[in-house]
Length: 235
Image 1 (cartoon, rainbow, N blue to C red):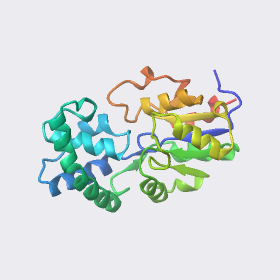
Image 2: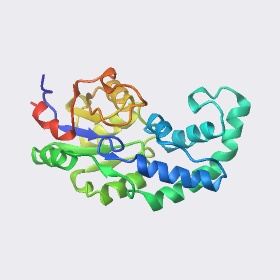
Image 3: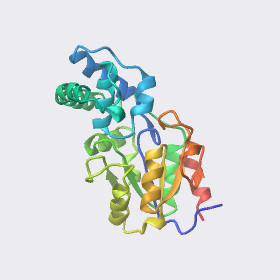
Image 4: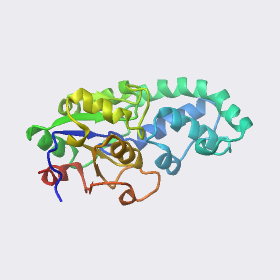
């Protein structure tokens, strides 16, 4: 059933508009090399991206050190071991990602066409990602997607990140719409839970990074094959 009275669309970035695993892989492996740690594989990245750079780096450090991943770091010694390396890892990761941003990533099919259709229909468009804002803005520019968005917010734009509803509520406020007038378009449980908690509608794409789980299991109003399928589902 089409979603009604939609005035705005909030779009996630990584895994929704752009496949950025290549950027993450290259940046993290340069970082790990600087720390004399072994390289990371894509399988780990697919289930750890999406919750912000801090979570990603801590998860990768824990995994490469043979420790429990961040979600299960209850052991004090394990946590301290990761903390010891985190500051250096964060600095090196920021350096490498800034240099690599956009080089090993690709825009998913139908993204530009879908955004143009939504923009032409008079909908307000915002990009909301857990990626740091400076990296997000630069990636949108490199991929020629920045012109579709009146607002761009990153993981450091609000006090909390998705799946907390705060970023969704802040984005709706900035756009001048009620949460019930907005649809969150994303690829993960983070997007779905944040939108539901904020009172926004939820549209999801199946090709992104959802921590190895089927996207259809996440709370949603729509599951779309691509961004270019959203406008026909809005009344």
